Image (cartoon, rainbow, N blue to C red; front, side, top):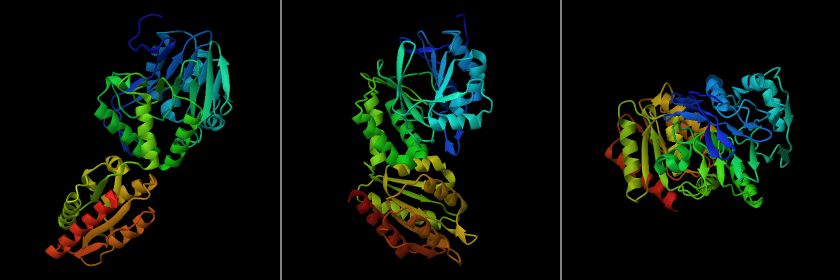
Length: 402
């Protein structure tokens, strides 16, 4: 089809990756994407050529060139998810190729129409659990509502045993490696955890239910192809079952074996208290992460909280409230619904002392047990105050190990 700067990459015979690599993105609605991202799209060729998802609008030319390196025809487009990083190039694709059909979930039809008024090809609803033959290939559609948008769905090719999982089982990570088994396992785990913590954690019950449903249906894909990050291939060091197992564990709350101490400080008093809390917890051998809010991105803190069984929050009082950097973290973490963790709070103040009671009120909404009395001190903690903070750490560690 002629030479191109951007070319399709074969996933398996007749299926190509035609997405885009975004080396520069560093923020995804409040989530720090320090390794960039990919916007994956897939072209299935045959008597009818099918495109699964598109890319962010700014990367339309990459998508077009990769498609053109394989074919000059797209007959059907499947939209698994209407968010702009997966549908931004859709209007251009419809104009360039004039496909016969545009398929989406019921909510996807509504969302696409609301995003892009007057699409050249009107979107059609596919039935949840329904199977459709398009040319040489069969496609089964499974709605995954609120994972993480109402329109989200999986597209499964039963005869090829490949699952196009949209945002599920993905991660934000730019790179030249299409397959997970070519990537550093430690990076894969860290970026998977960061992705789950910052995007999917609020929907953990739905994640657990979906995984159970997929298992009951007997779907065990040879390849999982998400819309962000590398692809998972059976028979390699990065099996689909590995990432599915991680997600299942996070969804069910397994493996919460650490303590996160999240604090900020003005003149060092609350910082000293944070270190004393950590010292008490470490005595029991519990892994501890001490994070100063003003020096830690909120999404990094969320990733640490994902696998924590207990939390300690510390703040000085500023303007009769919680220190702003910590308040930012709290608001962000609240939206991610890290419920059920044990907790305790501490802090210092000069004269009014509202930060600690406000922290207590905020943490009560998290529906986890308070396991130690709060420690609030005026100006500088005395040795007795630090000993109380150390005891707080011991109590929190006991809550972690049971």
